[in-house]
Length: 270
Image (tube, rainbow, N blue to C red; front, side, top):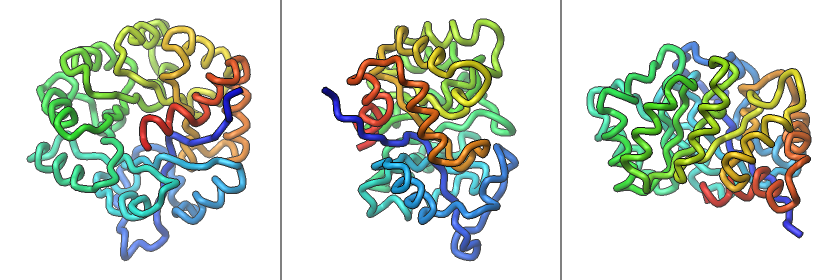
């Protein structure tokens, strides 16, 4: 029987020391960072809920593309993985990517394309550059886009199939049109693609297991990763978000439930 080890694929942190780590709020997401949200609180949440590790994803809404805090708190912590981010409208994207890649513990690069940061990079040549750099460096790409960008994303993935991709929040199908889930399921044909199934996807009306079951049928559960989106997701406490994930995965068999709740994330980022 598979051992169930919980590993959270998507958390954020923000330091209370604004002198050492100045905030640059972009307006993206909630204002979760106004409350206690440093790495110390993250470790308290993990320990309280029996979660063994977490992927710290650059909080673009708080720090923009200054990854100093996320990089520093994950550098020597085996329980935490690091996903940084670069400004895809910057003047020298290749230099920014290579500078981020100099962090030995970098596990992935977040490609932000929602809110004020639109997703023109999917089609203007920037995405192709980033995919080639990711192939050279050997890191996972983490697009944060809406579902209308999935066809362009597919083109990039098929051009460079060796690059592993993990989409944040399943590309927010709830914000898409009536075909959003069908379009997301169709991307399962691209073997390099993984989905981060977050609290945003699970915490709503109806049974969250239906969402997980639908994606597991299309992708196979080895390419699905649970992420709490804590503390960005504010409607529940961290222990409640963990229980929500367990509830959403209850129809999977023991092996695949263990993968969804942690094993798949550990394989991707550790």
